[in-house]
Length: 195
Image 1: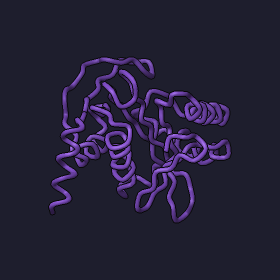
Image 2 (image 1 turned 180 degrees about the horizontal axis):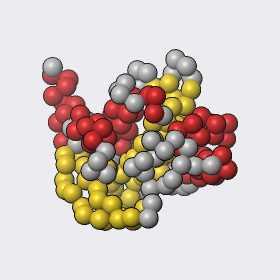
Image 3 (image 1 turned 90 degrees about the vertical axis):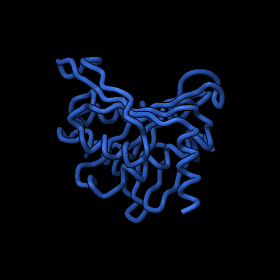
Image 4 (image 1 turned 45 degrees about the horizontal axis):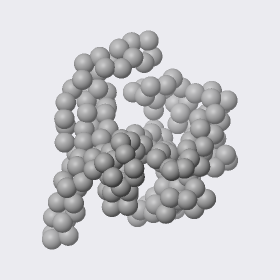
């Protein structure tokens, strides 16, 4: 399931897959958009910057053991890349004392349609059921209410507000941390099955 040449996660509307070089124009459509990168750690990208970004994401697919899953979010019906999502694992050996953190980016015209929630739900499933992670977390800028709502929809717990904990775009920024444990995720899955 984790081989770079055929890694795929399929959801009702989306395909999450490894990047290929030909994806760069679709990626550029969102990483060059100031609104999309507003809360991210990098500025809007040039075409060359986007090509380098895609090459980096492709490179992670070939690491052994693979601990970073940078995946294209593809709308199945149109077969178009509309964003990306990543899960980075850390701690010990995979399946043992591991935790993960994720982030995502989505083309601006795709916001508000449930695509981020659908992709993140699939990543939680992959992280907990396949990789056997203990904990998965993310953080958001306190002004990024949409991202926080998505994490809350997924049953993630708000763990804290860190004050000026990272420096980007020439200023110190706060972040709000969300997380969910494997046991909490399993309890959610069991409750949904009983409904």
